[in-house]
Image (cartoon, rainbow, N blue to C red; front, side, top):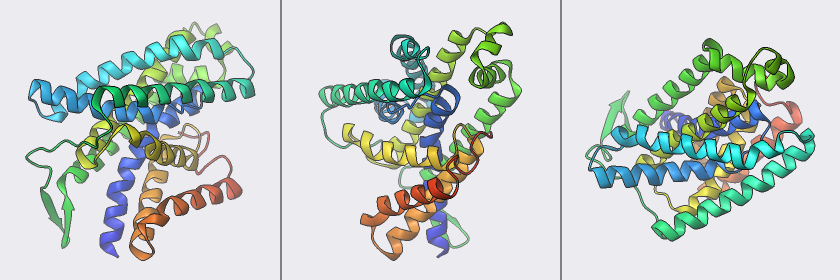
Amino acid sequence: MLNVLALGILNGSIYALVGAGLSLTYGRQNVIDVANPAFIVVGAYLVLFFSQRLRLDPYIVTPLALAVLFALGAIVQVVLINPLLSRPDFEMHVQSALVLFGLALFIQVTLTLAFSADFRGIHTGYTDSVVRIAGLRLPLVKLIATGLASVTLLSLYTFLTQTFIGKAILATYANRETAQLLAINVKRIDIITYGLGTAIAGIAGLVIALTFSFSPSSVLPWTVIGFAVAVIGGKGSVLGTFIAGLTVGIVEAAVSVTISANWTYFAVYSLLLLVFVVRPSGLLGERL
C-alpha cells in the first residue's frame, strides 16, 4: 500500500506539472488551450535534440528548449489568439478550442515527419538509478521530477503573487479594461502569459522525456491527463493544480494495482465527473 501511495505521489507531481501550463493559459486568459499538451511533446523532442547534438545532460540544455518554446508561444499568441480576444466569451472559447486543436494536429504531424512515429526516450547515466527510502526502491529520475515540479509550481505561484508582471497578469485576467486604465500593456501581458504557459510545458516535456517513452502520438494521452488535472484543480489555481495532480496520480496507481491499468482513464474521468457535479469550479477554482 505504501508503495502504491509513493508511486502515485511521484507520478502525480509530474501530472501536476503537465496541467500547470494549461491551467495558466485557461485560467488567466480564458483560452481553451488544446495545444498546450502538444507543446509538452515538442519540449520532450527539443530536449532530446539539443542533448544529442550538444552532447550535454538534458537538464543543462533545458533552458535553451524553454527559450524556443517561449518564442513559439509568443508567436501563437500574436498570430492565432489575439484576433479572438475581442469576441464574446462563449464564441472565443469555442473558436480558441478549434484553432488550437488544429494547431495541435499540425504539431503532431510535423513531429511525425521530422522524427518519425517511433517511441523515444532519453537514457542517461542516472536513468536506472534507484533510491531507497523507508524500505521503498524509488526511481531517482522520478524523485528529481517531483522536486522539479514542486519548485516550478512554487516559483509560478511566487511569480504571480509577488512580481509586477505576475500581478499584471492577474489584473489583466480580472478586468482587461481596468488593467489598461492602470497603464498595463495587456497585449504584452497576453504574450508573456501564453509564452510562460508553453515554457512550463517545456519543463513538463523534460520530465516526460526522462521518465517515460514518447512519440508524436503522445499528444493525446497527455491531453487527457492535462485537462483532467487543470479542471479538477480549478481554473487558474496553482495550488489546486498541484493537489489535483497528486490526486490523479494516486487514483491511477491504486486502480492499476487493484483492478487493471486499462481502467485508469475511466477512473480519472469518473473523478473529473464527480468534481463537476460536486464542485463545478474545481477544488480551488478562482484561487491561487
